[in-house]
Length: 388
Image 1 (cartoon, rainbow, N blue to C red):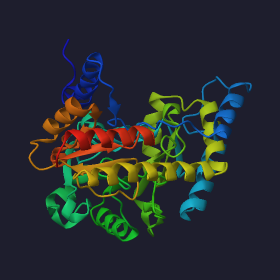
Image 2: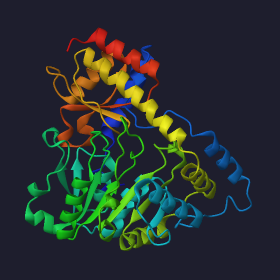
Image 3: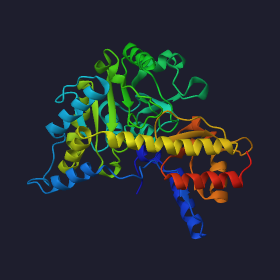
Image 4: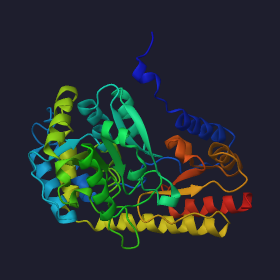
């Protein structure tokens, strides 16, 4: 039975290989410290869990939810955007609930990308950006994120014929995997470029609340006129430690949301009502838990980066996200070769940069997804086993 062409180009080989390596090391009796995944290791705040449990006992809790999202959830999102970014949204037309932001990032391609259409995708970038385009049988045009350019795409380097042909562009700041950030000046350039070339601009801002050292990431919707061509994807997974709940939302251009709304109305029945009510409690409730979570990740970042720098492995401290993007030390070959050697010698698992695109070669992504004691142990093992 032959699979469709659109599926043949998809692979999770690197992540499967890392998982197999993990089991192989554990079978040998090695204590593995897994910093490869991007899933929060913390629970949601108690008031969020309480809201979820109570909502499950309400009459009709287990009936189909609207694809649109509960009106009160969408209103809460609009209120949160006004409070957090100073952006006004029409909850009816400019907000749509999602089963996690990945749901929207994948399916928006089905709404707007025809076979052969070009989509501008960051390289390196989160895998769903490419996967969504390929499932719609579109063509990926990579936007190189280079260290010398602060991991921001250079719009002037995009050939005119590509820009004119492009249907959509995806950006992501704070970024996964490179942990870079962008300011409003950059977003203004992005909006201007997209408007000039009639491109739908999608911004993934899932890590906006995991920011450090007093930094506050902006929303692209803060740019004047951005809502004419932009949509922004957000998630409660990282900010509120609700990854398994699968709850997110997309905001912005009503015409773009109309297209995504049609796709989703034909393939799902919306997010479980109780989960949406837990999301309302998260967004409306006290935000001190969010700040505490960000402070915890900041301490983890400092332990890891300061410790590895002391060991001779030099890397930048990110201002946001739950990752560190580190160059492969000199003399260790490719990203994959280094990752495998690191695992075999220390039991510490990270992800080779080429898992996120061609431009990721020469780097590894390290997740801040273990407690401080385990990160200290990871640093200790690396220091003892490597001389950088």
